[in-house]
Structure formats: C-alpha cells, structure tokens
Image (cartoon, helix red, strand yellow):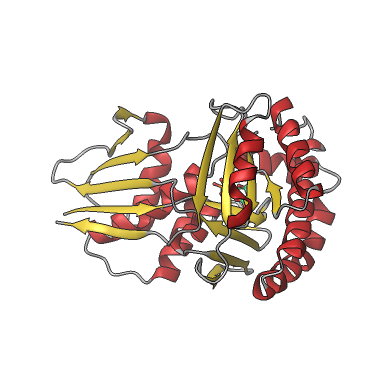
Length: 320
Ligand code: DP6
C-alpha cells in the first residue's frame, strides 16, 4: 500500500488571485498556466496499520508545519476514516518562496494517495481534489499549457496545447531563497477585503483569458507576452493596494524586469511574470534562452537561475 507520484509546479500567465468560496477553496477567477519540466516534487504515500497521526518528511526533515494541510488532502482523497499515512516528499527547488511549490506538492499527493489506497479516480476529479487543497495545484495534473475554468460550483481543467507544438521555455531568476512573509492564501483574503482594485481585477479577467487563449492557439508570442505581463501587474496592484500592503518584490525583482525590458527592446522573444514572491519568471522561445540566462545571471541581486521546458502532468511512478 505504498505509491510514489511525481508532479511539476506550474507558472500562471493569467493568474488565480481571490476565492469565490473559502471553505471549498474555489477560485474567484479562471486562470491559465504552463506546467514545468525540470522543477519536481516526488511524493510517496504509505498507509500503515498503526493508529495515530500522519507523518510528513520533506527533503529528509520532519515538516510539522505542513502536516495539517497534507492530512486534510488525504481525507479528501481517501475519506477521513482511513489509516494513518507516512508521507515523504522530495523537492528539487526552494519551498514556500513563490515558486509554486504547493502546486506540485498537492498534485503529486492526490495521485499518490489515490494509488496507495487503491482508489481509481479520473484526472479531472483528481484536479478538483488537488485544487480544493491549493487552487493552483489543480493545473499541475495536466501538462503543457493548461486552462482552469472557475465555475459557480466547481472548477474544470483542460490542457490547451501540449508542449511540443509551441516549445515555450521558462527561466526563473531566484532573488531570495527564504520563505515569503505572507502566504498566498492569507494575501488573497486581504486583497478581497481591502483592495479597491479587487472588483475590477475580477471584472476584466475573462477578457485577458480570451486574449491569452487566442494567442496560444495562434502561437502569437507578442500577444501572449502583452496580456500576461498586464495580468501579472494587475494582480500585484491588488496586492500592493491591500491594507496593510503586500509587496513581494525586492530591488533585484525590479532589476530583472529592467533587464527583460532591455532584451525585448533588442528584439528577443521574452516576457516576465511573477507570483506571490520576489522571483522573476522569464518566459521565452528556445532561440532566446541563452541570451536571457546570460542577462539575468548578470543582474544585481540574482542568487540563482533555474531553467525549464514545459513538462507533463502529475503521474504515478510506482505502487507496491
Ligand atoms: C500567485 O494556489 O498557492 O501563484 O489556493 O490558497 O493554496 P491557495 O493558493 P495558491 O495561489 C497561487 C497564486 C499565484 C497565482 C497562480 O498560480 O495562479
């Protein structure tokens, strides 16, 4: 009764920010993302006969702070009258630092939990279960370019384009490796309650999604770049205008944006996006990757670079 699953984080180009229903963790807006390849979470779940609490280790260390969310996720997938589970997670990138680590964690967890409890669940339902644990995780069940539609009662998730036909790549400039000061869940609630821009953020989201969807289907990089940067800056405007304000950026974040503007002026196919953290994600076409990496490596305050192509959705590696 042990299963091991792998999932990769996804980076939203049209962002999820705000919840329609906090209890069910239903997003207030639809969203659109890229599933990565080389950043990975491997999750092993084993249900044991012993009574008592679940245990969780992340990268070889106990992780009590995340245990409640993990246990709640196991309850959702397997039911609350279940045996205690031993959960072991290995992650090859910084956790809780705005690199979407919860998206790969919960996507891998639902797949491993279902397999280790011998429960057959289709991918769409697994995506809904993952989304109930962390909204962005629903998108990591699928690979390539993925759209999440936020309905009144539930979400639906569909891959829009696999990675092969349009091989977008992502360079991540890490400007801070520590944990973010305010988690995204808490930051969203603050934005919903206090930002004067929140209602217009909601009102314009479907327009942005339509433009992004059309750009992807035409493989129109410039149009995708324009709407994704605009959408990202609107989300950060909601954060900045929350009370008290939430500013995830540092001075290196801004230096990266300047470096990307310079590359764009030189004609390189690259645009930026940022999430609930100070890291900058540069989305580019394969021909521009080397020059983007060189420019970001030289940018003051950049501590590390990661590079990824687009990858597949969450999957089971083995079950015994
Ligand atoms: C900025 O999925 O972490 O990355 O549902 O509260 O767990 P919870 O939020 P989470 O939020 C992700 C926010 C974002 C944008 C995005 O991924 O769409």
